Length: 233
Image (cartoon, rainbow, N blue to C red; front, side, top):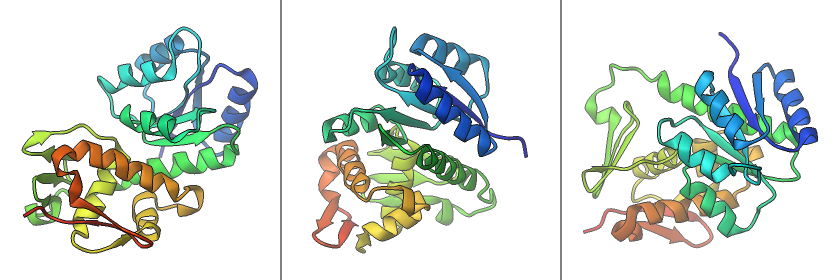
């Protein structure tokens, strides 16, 4: 199997070099960019499997780069930034990123996050195409999910979400009317729970509630335990 290609977009040379070195040591091919213009150019010229993207950059910031990439691609994006407030993190997920790591960070954790994300995508893409509709189609109220085509519909309208958002909604539907603990969500959605802060689940739940709009109350908070997805009557 050929190695995965990572695009590292970081204008600080020291951070770019360190992160590149760790990914190369882990067996990845690495392409780098020091600003948004170069990042978009290299993304268009190469087959990129995952992007590690800084936000505060010259010329074009990371949010704009993300928006432009999302117009044509669902490539996994991990944001690397010193912006760490809940508002900043929520802004990232509103731009349909897949994960978020705040500076300063351990490059090994970033590599672990990338491996986990790529593994989840690989697992989804290798699901048997012979599954019956009952196995690949999930429904809860006005939410419909097709596990084979990775399509989410709300009120019969296709809704764009990140891979992690899709996986979390799928897990909640599979376990609808049951309590999903944070521990179980980390295990089933993120797989490598040792590299994920449990608070990220709450951030994702807020984003999913926003996606559901008028149906946001379908996701119930079970204090001290986790979350439960219920069908509206």
